[in-house]
Length: 101
Image (cartoon, rainbow, N blue to C red; front, top):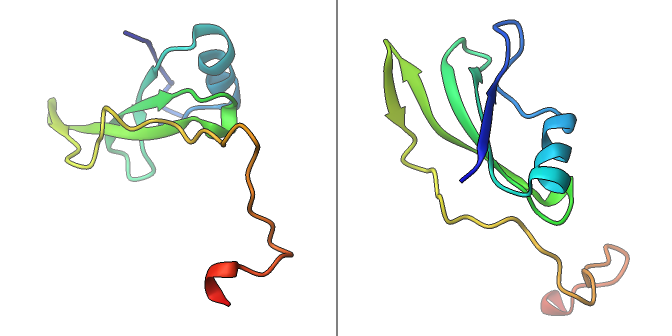
């Protein structure tokens, strides 16, 4: 289940921050968008919300060409957003990586 919307022809197929905020904090379900990419090709996108707007993931479900839907073979409907561990991320760029020592 989810909701979808379209963007006018003059806007590219990409979720705006307002779109991502809506799906992340209000709808809390995947959101879908039909629009046109930078090459002028019709696309259908899916945004899967995470705990924050920045943890959500956007994938291309497929393209539309000549009135036909062409599935994206790399689309993974089971792909989950990145969720940091409960204790937070342990990566610190100022500390040496113990695996490389």
